[in-house]
Image (tube, rainbow, N blue to C red; front, top):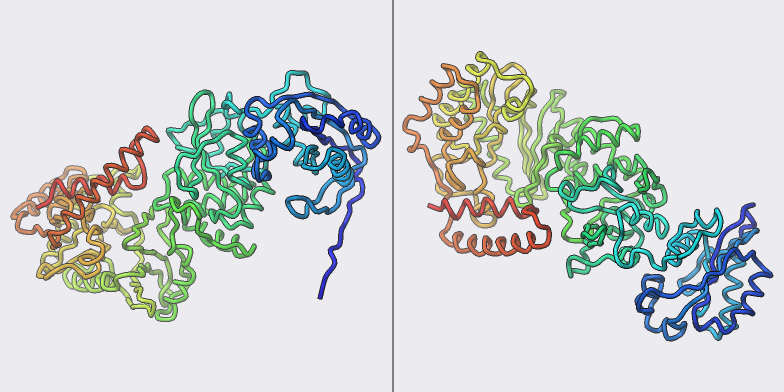
Length: 635
């Protein structure tokens, strides 16, 4: 069955439109005839003779951008000499669908017919250019004259005109954003509050913008690629004599769902000379970026998300509150979580599947109201991915830890606390349930502790008094005695794993890396596949990377408390015979050679990074630092 295309036309909308008719050099032999015909159909506002400011092939390429297949051929057909720009006003525009060299387009029918007629008169070959729409007029009039469509609508601007503005760089970011606004739909995805006049590259290294076509954007702005990889969208633009870095995200790049990207471009709002996403899009785009595209959420993102949520009328105070609305926002529109083409962008494969994981856990435990937790402070470990949930088990609040790998490590979150609670039931988290899922992952259900970690308590505005310090010190010493009595080495004793409960007692948590002192080796997952997971254990509270002593770590934690007699007594107790309690990672000698090779590779990457960005910071720098510690402290 064949269907016939229905060509629709839209009558005059009651207001006039500005358009361009451009006679390239080799069309000007018919200039008089064309000008007479133009005057018979539309009002001529101005006639301006212009010349390309450099190599014509390069200039044609920049003017037409992605629409031009072969710029060199355009120069041969259309000429490289002076050309005539005729600014016209169509008093009664009518629009309809027509076939163009780029497919079917909704065009101004009068201007389209004039273009077809003039190209026939000049021998074909696109020697005459006209604008098909108001968007194209806005773009072309700026690129050919350096003046905005609003300026032309108010009258003929005074000469001289600038052809292809910004060709040698931009005087300011404000000028650059004027060019973007005149030539294409765009939005600044993040950190737009500093733009256009207060951008500080030391705070945010680049400017993320979303456009329809990254190559066209780069051509208009005169941007150069920073990396050779065609999937990288990192560019540098000269502004006020300095290089400013941009990421040109584009529709269909997988950074967000393409339908969402188109919606963001369509619904952008201009404020202060910069086009930003709508408040709703800006909020959800930031939450999506923070949760799914970052290994750790930047410290300022929560405050920015709060401000955007308030502007959009969205409730909530933290990322724990916002992940559910984000899912509802996406699903209600049929949008998906997508993987970027730019592989330099980290993409979390676990958190976007949290509902699927929660459903799987509910098949084995009567969990209710399952929702992700602790997202504000979440740090993704790609080698040992973990999700934390708040939930209810049999009507009581609980805490759930899930990992898709190494069920044995999850089982330790049950086994070791159960053993330890025989000695110190009030100072250890209570495990409730654990299970291995059919897909190979596992989860453990623990009591939900109301309170703050010791790390959070030390950072709070309310100081720790003498009485509280004494109580905490006594609990710390008791925890170490309990661990040693059960033959358990925690290996990750630090303030973040000690919880000050609402009742004022201290409880130890997180036994995922704990071992029995009589162990014969590491779990196979760590020793055979991801040995590097063990080196940073304990952070600065460990003896050194790969070397642990729970007494040593707890003494370091005690040193953070205000001085009191109980604290001093606990330090004396734990310092006695401390060296006997030290354990080391039991790993093959071949690790040293492998780590040296990786360390050398990271040194080279670090050097290249500093050459490009003039500063010492990147995703691999944390890995670089603790690898250097491992090699320096190797036993």
